Every structure is written in C-alpha cells, then in structure tokens.
Image 1 (cartoon, rainbow, N blue to C red):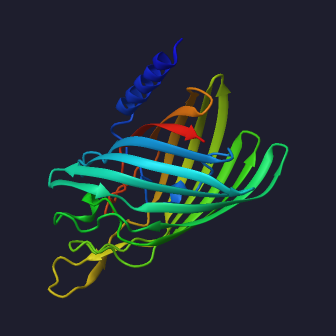
Image 2 (spheres, helix red, strand yellow):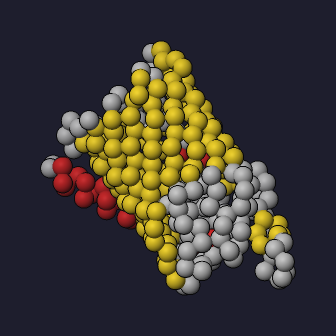
Length: 286
C-alpha cells in the first residue's frame, strides 16, 4: 500500500471518530499544562506543523481552527528545549476572532536512562502572546488566556508506559474587558501507553485535569470593578486521547490525533471546553 493511501485512511478514521464523540465535552486545548510531556526522544532538531479542529459543544457552539508550529531541539546531551506557537480562529454565534495564540516554551532535562527506563523533569512558561480583548467579545472567543503562566512537570518512562504529572501556576487576570477572568491553577496527571503495529506507532493517553481553585470574573451588575466567583469552576476533568504516527520516509512522520472526554466539563469561562479535538501534522527531523 502506498504512503498516500495509508495517510488518507488514517484521516478517515479520525474523522469518523469525531462523529462518535460529538456530544461529549473535553478540556486541555490548551491552558498549557497538557503540553508538559515528552514529545520526542530523538536527538537534533524536530519541527512539526499541525492543524487542529475542535468544537465546544452546543452550550457555547464555538468552533476552533488552529495551525500550530512546534519545534524541539536537543541543546546538549539530555537537555532539550521546545517551543510551540498557535495561530487560531475562534468562531461562534457572537462573531469570530483570529490571531496568534499563547506561546509555550519548555525545557526538558533527562536525569537518567537505563535499559527501558528514564526520568525527566520539565520547566517552562506559557507566554501571553495571544489576544485576550479582541473584537469586544468574551474570553471564550479569544485566542489567548491573557496571563503569563509557569509550567512544571515530571515524567517517568517504563518500557512502553509513560507517566506524567504537571502543574500550571496562573497568576493575574486576563485583560478581557468583559470578564477579566482569573483562573485557578491546574494539575494534570497523564498515563500513556505506546503500541507498535509496524510501520504504525500508536499511543493512548488518559489525562486527569484538576482546577485547584475557584475562577472569578468581573461582576457585570456592578458599576465599580468588582469580581464574583464562578460556581463549579474548580472542576475535575478526565480525557482520553489517541495518536497515530506513520513514517513517510527517514526524516518525516505523519502524525494525527483525536481527543475526547470521559467526564463532562460543565463550566466554560476560559474557552477551553471541547466536544472533541482532531489534529493532523507532519514531524520533520533534521
């Protein structure tokens, strides 16, 4: 079977999967903490352009189309820096916003690797490069969250299993004039299982996301700038994600993914709710 035929089949499988899970709700696209993981163990430079499409579900009826550029480089042995920047378009009943999203930069330090085991620690930041007050629309429509956040994480790999835990510290408020959103911090735990179906590599991940504090927004009923807590915004979220990798040649790999929820996220004041997210891209090694 030719490479193009296999790629088309994988895209069809992903599209069919989105129809199955269209009525559910998901998070992690992307406050930042979900990006704290080991993207690749290859040395050298990797660049991965990816296109993502997601929907929020009927409550807000938002659609998200994102072109994301990811780059990773091994600075010295066992030390890797990665950078991701999205360009997004958010559309809904009130209008649409397009523009640069929040950039994420991450340092990964591998402390040991022996046989089929390794341990990494990661640190980085989500930088408020995206719009948070564009078009006079609420925070849910914006391409950025409006805060500069700190990211911390650790990863342990044992053979084909990976275990991640990450933390996102989110100080300050968004500059969005309608909501002035303050988000609580997030903790994310991820369990990932990799499988080989030569030449395809597949992985399935379970992500548990906990918002540690109540979010608050501007009180629309008050003339002065005062804030009210958003009930239920310190919620727990459980997502399932699947990824497929297919080598196109020695330096390029086709990558596609699908994520959907197992537990429903009821409150969406930050625009992170997704009914599903589907993605496709190419990882290029140099």
